[in-house]
Image (cartoon, rainbow, N blue to C red; front, side):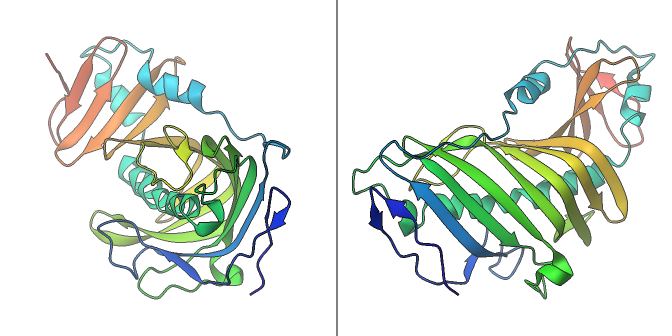
Length: 274
């Protein structure tokens, strides 16, 4: 497959044809892999435009500073106001593997900075989605695709990434079983910090889906989720407009409000933590 020839300081650079596969750490190579079928860069020593990408820092600040103040009379209602938390967690975890292709792109030979050239511009990724992880089919007509736009400045991929999913089918894990996950419409990610070209991505992930995220038949609209220190969190708005942050763990759900933390074990009442 012929690849786009990016330009670096007026010199053409050939991108070798490859069928790229990325496997996240601790995941067997055939599982949750993606076919990266298009990689294009516009890079130069200061002349290329840097594209506008989503800025999720205000949303990230809302995760850090929830506004609700809960008590024993309303904490259970707050918990119940956010249904299907396990499904949402599975969807965000699966979306994490999309960022694996961003990580790969930052370390490809086409983004090598050893030649001391200052890279600036854009990097586009088109990802064919695999569907079933045990029998992936990288066919856009069957499992859809996802396109991402990355901004590059001063030899760094900037933290905000925007894109569009076209019925992108992934496979995640829900309660220990495989689950079909589908992304459609706009997507946005915050990588937790800029990535220097040639370096791996190691930050937290904030994902925002203004469109639809469907997990095991349940559809979420206009949701977000964060993977912080390996744990899933989501920001929820209560009927009164105030916000809480819920974190899903193996032993229960943690709720963080403006004044402290509550822990809700399965089958037990939520208890405020000291």
